[in-house]
Image 1 (cartoon, rainbow, N blue to C red):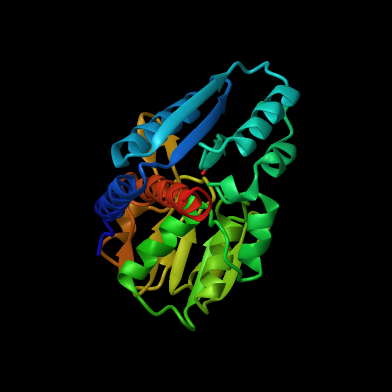
Image 2 (cartoon, rainbow, N blue to C red; image 1 turned 90 degrees about the vertical axis):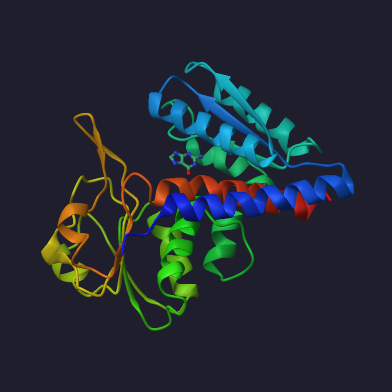
Length: 280
Ligand code: GUN
């Protein structure tokens, strides 16, 4: 089975659109998302443009604040503080990566946890890892929703996550633990990656190595979720060798058209949740 992330994302976007339209008729208010983009890194420019377009399509007011690479950390922090206080801003997102002279930790800490639509602020990270209510990072949330489309009850399943980033691997592990999975995180220093992956009922690859996961790395009944977006020549490929695996295993996400559209749908979902929680 090939998991159609594009279709699932569209279903979520339609639900969000309907809810926003209903809320607008009742309250005359709509959610708003402000995205801060620093520098001229082309992939970030494309991601941010897509986020803005998708937000507008569901009725979220969206604004991109663009800054030159040389902008000071102080100026960005001042802007974040202003947006934190702004009653009309539901969500704030600072697109990563940042230029080297800007401290990512300081920036992420500055975003008010209630407006942190990425779920990267340590308050949200801590709440998620404690099993409390929190804003959940968009990509792992999207992955979980796709996994649950294939298998509703994940209790007792062995989940293996390749990659330990704050954006994907770590929050993915927390979400799957909450679903009562047995969770293994593997990474660049793990010995015998293939052996670990062969234990997976659910395999999430989020490491940024093109076609890393091969046919003989997974069980036939595994669900494989590919978070990778890697440019190889002119092609975009995932961390999983899709062609080798697609007819062998239970379910797999393609790249593109798998996790990517779900990340954006979940960002819209988080923005709507922030709006409902603090602006209505
Ligand atoms: N850069 C790549 N992915 C992301 C994301 O999910 N959020 C932000 N803020 N930056 C990113």
